[in-house]
Length: 96
Figure 1: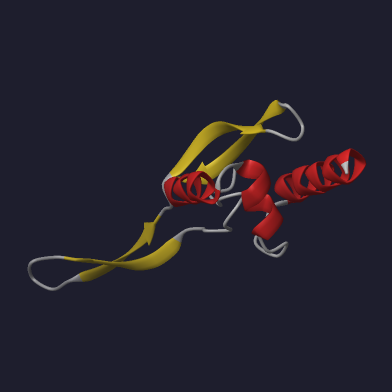
Figure 2: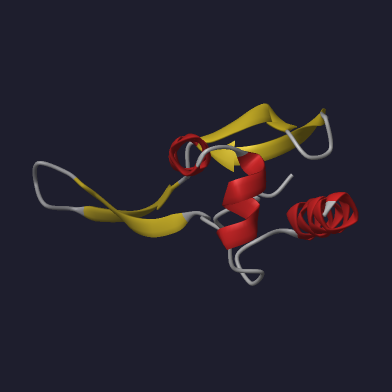
Protein backbone atom coordinates (compact mmCIF):
# COMPACT_ATOMS: atom_id res chain seq x y z
CA UNK A 1 0.00 0.00 0.00
CA UNK A 2 1.48 3.33 -1.01
CA UNK A 3 2.00 6.02 1.61
CA UNK A 4 0.08 8.75 -0.22
CA UNK A 5 -2.99 10.63 0.99
CA UNK A 6 -5.98 9.94 -1.27
CA UNK A 7 -7.40 13.46 -1.00
CA UNK A 8 -4.41 15.80 -0.87
CA UNK A 9 -1.75 13.74 -2.66
CA UNK A 10 0.72 14.22 0.22
CA UNK A 11 3.49 11.62 0.10
CA UNK A 12 6.81 10.84 1.75
CA UNK A 13 9.51 13.52 1.80
CA UNK A 14 13.22 12.96 2.19
CA UNK A 15 15.74 14.65 4.43
CA UNK A 16 18.61 14.00 6.79
CA UNK A 17 19.05 12.70 10.32
CA UNK A 18 21.60 15.05 11.84
CA UNK A 19 23.55 13.75 14.80
CA UNK A 20 25.14 15.75 17.61
CA UNK A 21 28.45 15.37 15.74
CA UNK A 22 26.70 16.82 12.63
CA UNK A 23 26.82 13.51 10.73
CA UNK A 24 24.08 13.32 8.11
CA UNK A 25 22.26 10.17 7.02
CA UNK A 26 19.26 9.98 4.70
CA UNK A 27 15.79 9.44 6.14
CA UNK A 28 12.13 9.65 5.06
CA UNK A 29 9.42 11.84 6.55
CA UNK A 30 6.16 9.89 6.16
CA UNK A 31 2.72 11.55 6.17
CA UNK A 32 0.42 10.83 9.12
CA UNK A 33 -2.05 8.54 7.31
CA UNK A 34 -5.23 7.18 8.88
CA UNK A 35 -7.87 4.76 7.61
CA UNK A 36 -11.21 6.56 7.99
CA UNK A 37 -14.78 6.17 6.80
CA UNK A 38 -16.24 9.50 5.72
CA UNK A 39 -20.00 9.94 5.36
CA UNK A 40 -21.40 11.32 2.11
CA UNK A 41 -24.66 13.21 2.65
CA UNK A 42 -25.60 13.02 -1.03
CA UNK A 43 -24.96 9.29 -1.44
CA UNK A 44 -26.21 8.45 2.06
CA UNK A 45 -23.39 6.04 2.85
CA UNK A 46 -19.86 5.88 4.22
CA UNK A 47 -16.78 5.71 2.00
CA UNK A 48 -13.41 4.39 3.20
CA UNK A 49 -10.31 6.48 2.53
CA UNK A 50 -6.67 6.47 3.62
CA UNK A 51 -6.00 10.15 4.28
CA UNK A 52 -3.61 12.33 6.25
CA UNK A 53 -4.60 13.95 9.54
CA UNK A 54 -4.31 17.33 7.80
CA UNK A 55 -6.80 16.25 5.11
CA UNK A 56 -9.23 15.04 7.78
CA UNK A 57 -9.16 18.49 9.39
CA UNK A 58 -9.68 20.09 5.95
CA UNK A 59 -12.74 17.91 5.28
CA UNK A 60 -14.23 18.97 8.64
CA UNK A 61 -13.39 22.62 7.96
CA UNK A 62 -15.09 22.63 4.54
CA UNK A 63 -18.26 21.05 5.92
CA UNK A 64 -18.05 17.41 4.91
CA UNK A 65 -16.80 15.10 2.19
CA UNK A 66 -19.21 16.30 -0.50
CA UNK A 67 -18.18 19.95 -0.21
CA UNK A 68 -14.47 19.05 0.06
CA UNK A 69 -14.51 16.97 -3.12
CA UNK A 70 -16.47 19.64 -5.00
CA UNK A 71 -13.63 22.15 -4.45
CA UNK A 72 -10.71 19.68 -4.71
CA UNK A 73 -8.46 19.66 -7.79
CA UNK A 74 -8.69 16.47 -9.84
CA UNK A 75 -4.88 16.26 -10.15
CA UNK A 76 -4.47 15.86 -6.36
CA UNK A 77 -7.16 13.18 -5.92
CA UNK A 78 -6.56 9.44 -6.20
CA UNK A 79 -8.47 7.29 -8.71
CA UNK A 80 -10.80 6.10 -5.92
CA UNK A 81 -11.51 9.67 -4.77
CA UNK A 82 -12.15 10.81 -8.36
CA UNK A 83 -14.67 8.00 -8.81
CA UNK A 84 -16.48 9.06 -5.62
CA UNK A 85 -16.41 12.72 -6.71
CA UNK A 86 -18.08 11.85 -10.03
CA UNK A 87 -20.67 9.68 -8.23
CA UNK A 88 -21.55 12.58 -5.91
CA UNK A 89 -21.78 15.06 -8.81
CA UNK A 90 -24.05 12.69 -10.72
CA UNK A 91 -26.31 12.18 -7.68
CA UNK A 92 -26.52 15.94 -7.06
CA UNK A 93 -27.42 16.58 -10.71
CA UNK A 94 -30.19 13.97 -10.48
CA UNK A 95 -31.61 15.68 -7.35
CA UNK A 96 -31.76 19.12 -8.94
